[in-house]
Length: 556
Ligand code: SPV
Ligand code: MG
Image (cartoon, rainbow, N blue to C red; front, side, top):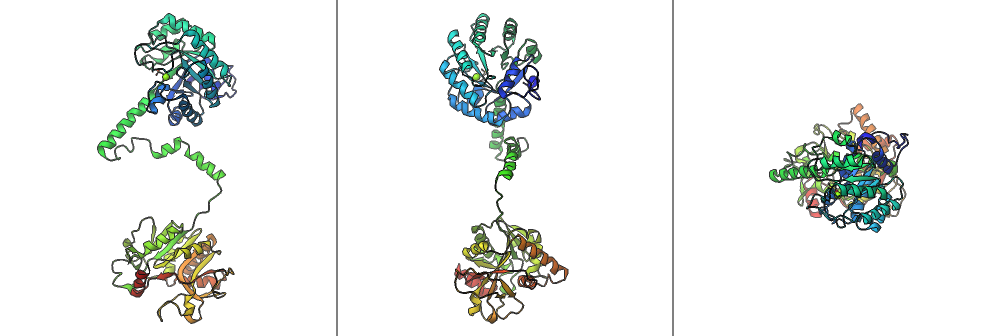
């Protein structure tokens, strides 16, 4: 209906009042001049018809059946067609004229069909004067026609059942197709018009438009005339316009185009066992998303969905070689040493994944190419030999945003420790093992990140009094400490910002390269930034030397 329905819909009297879909189809049928409806057979093709600029859709019986893989012989039930129409109507804003075949039975079936079509927002239906079950008009040599009076009963029943006044019923005359001749065609058209049909569809399977033009001449505009020039496609459209045709149905060309395109694509992929030659020749996945309105859903999500807090992500510091483990670390950093069939780092990442932490950034340095694990982001600290953990963390400063875990790359711990940490309150929360206090789990003389806290572990996990960090590292004697920082810390959005600022300050005062994580937290403590402590009692290990590695291999 491009000519008559383009732009703002107009009422038949020419006013710019907005019309319903049914109103627009009716206006197109009744207005002088020629309009067009284009075939669609599902929601997607209906959208494509609207996108092309057509102001109306022909929901073709042939192509809807074919799209379902069945014949145009009423093999698809009328309710299956109705479901398809609902998708098409929901997907578009332009009127749909439905091919209602014979009306699926007698007057009673037409009544129910028309009611249901009105409920689904369909603008009009075309019913043909044949018998249920029908066969496509281009098959065979003329099919039995309905009795004229019986078909007029179907038309009247349909018109009496419409719940939308503007709904259109088009009566399709098959007399020419079935070889009954022009007089019979005109007799039927007159009877159908008197019975209340809003328009007459005169169908022909001739290669020339002669009989259609002959009919149009005799009909002389008694009511709107609709045609389907599938067979006489070579007739120039102006000829049909001049004949007084109101509506042309381009009846099946989207389905036929799709068949050609799908065959060619399947053939090529089958033959070439590759997608390279078809990509670029077919619609992109993005176009598919656009066609079905994915953007609208994203906007609706923003409006209606409660914002979901992003889960924490993690930064794993894995730049150091692990000198004490030479020569095992000749080829790879210690985080990639095998612990019972898997690199240490892979085990650490699995624990994080199991606790819902999936976005993991690993800071690499020594033998960085050996850190080739899947599903991680990497950041490189190429000056790893000159700096400590603070410098490595600073390399990942861009990732120090929002809720964030920071972990040494050479530790392993039970899942529950991370689960408890994720649930703990505080902008900066350090995990501290209290066993150091009782003699510790380490050989004497080994370096530990000793800490002193606001109070000691009471031995009860039911104790919910908060504990904060008072002192860390800096030569704190293990005997006087309350525990040992295990190398795992959680930061809130604010905590991340505080750490970022402190790293900047360390860079500015020249202490960044020489500092480890305890020094970073010691600086924050002296500035009275509260740092919370989560006490644990074992169930973790770190790998500093061959003794630790053997222990890890035994424990896993
Ligand atoms: C259809 O598109 O299903 C039609 C038109 O009814 S035709 O195939 O020409 O009969
Ligand atoms: Mg049909």
